[in-house]
Image 1 (cartoon, rainbow, N blue to C red):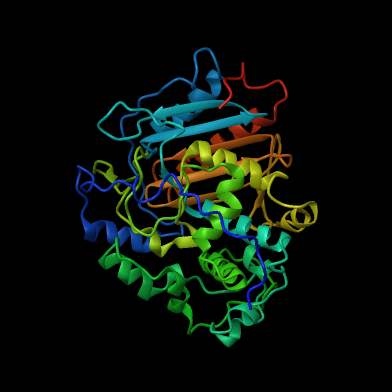
Image 2: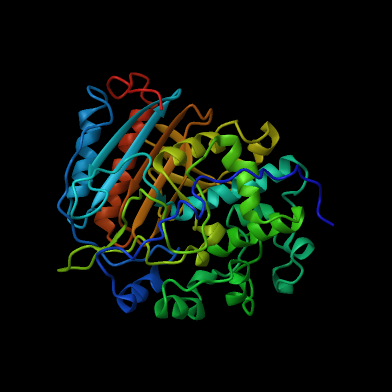
Length: 426
């Protein structure tokens, strides 16, 4: 019997199918076999070919006379670096006032700069959203952190039954990662736009035991957040997408955020790219179905919405003090994927990044075409997001440059002197 939870919000998400891009595939075609071979290795798990740089077009911070030229140069240098992403956009927000930094282009072959209202795949930052759903249900007593897979999802393998919601959210469950399954990768390799039954993704590893006793160590697994979403559905009797709208989108006014099942992106969007040595960047924005990522990485949002989300989730807006205390019980050494700036530690659907300038809380993510970083101070009043339009995780030098750039933005956020004059209110 599902525990009681308030009625769902039935308002329409502004990124519904009516607004989705329904036209032809990207003007620059992509080879399904070539993309599939890379995506099969890259979906959710952080592998991709090393990209080559597209010609960058640097742009000034949003609003005349605002922002720090040093931060703008750092973002432009990232785009211009060997293998750098074709585009990048970063947002610093302090007490409702924001600065926007852009570099490169939102679409190769155009001079259109990245913008705060451009849609993009947020990759594993979607795991923070599933954390927000689950912990909001804990606050409503529809879920408990000690609820087990065996209690709520008894159809899953008996060997997994002792795993708790807390362990799933902190990646200490030991669940095998479905996205590394050969069968899953073979399907994606053959057809990157294959439509998966998102609620059956764990079937790909249902014949496998746990990797270690639950709670004994940390291991990032995309299976964890699939199980979290299924537990939320079982506890409430409502679809995960409905719970997102009720518990996350509506309270935080995320009007441009959605969890699609297909491969199309709402317009306008930041184009994401796959590149290989000696070849021009290949547009993979709509190459992959979101159904194969679902609660672990399928959410589409905008830089502006992502900034609002992380401030609400890392701050006090969504959760009670008791639940936030559990959320922020951090396990040192537990790194997000890819690792964020500074020293990483894993909480419940949230990571702590201890930088040379101070600490922020957030999440990272990467998927074909996109790499994401979103973080906030504990009070939620200061936020930083950095979004780039390629998956940079297999080039150690480029990833190190990205992490250094993220840390520069974190330092600017935490500096009470401020990174130059602050911009306009969103």
